[in-house]
Length: 230
Image 1 (cartoon, rainbow, N blue to C red):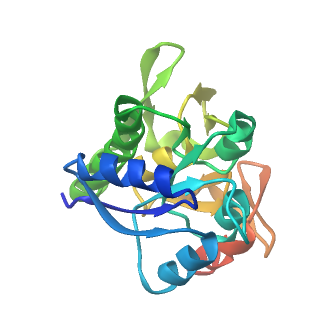
Image 2: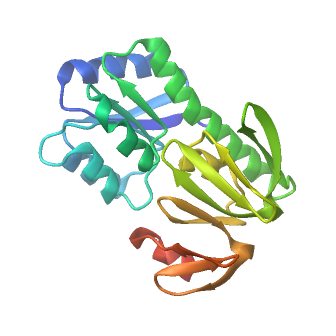
């Protein structure tokens, strides 16, 4: 499996140097570039793809959270900031982790290993195709086996997700990005920042919403083409 490509969006030179040093110490990370504001990062992303963004919140010109909302299909994101009050908003935008400055290398490794694990699971599913028909998730301190065929949709609830199946509902501490990476892309589609639906469970749809098992789920502005391609 290839290394994780990443960029830094950080206007504080010292913080950028610390992140650069941490990335260089991590064998599975490849730094593509460092940008002092979100506008420069946006220009880079127009012509390049990346797997992970280290994103500061208080940036000049365009704030970090506003920048994140402009990305239709964001990669994994790790927030780096001195302001803890933005943690809830970050999890609502499905960031992988939230690093509060100043953070040590050990805490940095915890965050990037979450990205690495999600990526490994995504590759494992891709290699298996859809021969594996289940996933194990942490639910109330135990691993619960959930069949792909029983999942109707998944809803983000800040730092948790709610998995709605044909039998019951489960709550697991996982980001939407992480669960999306672990699901077979042929069977599940993300149609909103906060929703992933099982293609086989879609009963009907309009330009604004899909109906899954009698529940109306909104289609995000950046995800309308996903439905058009089904």
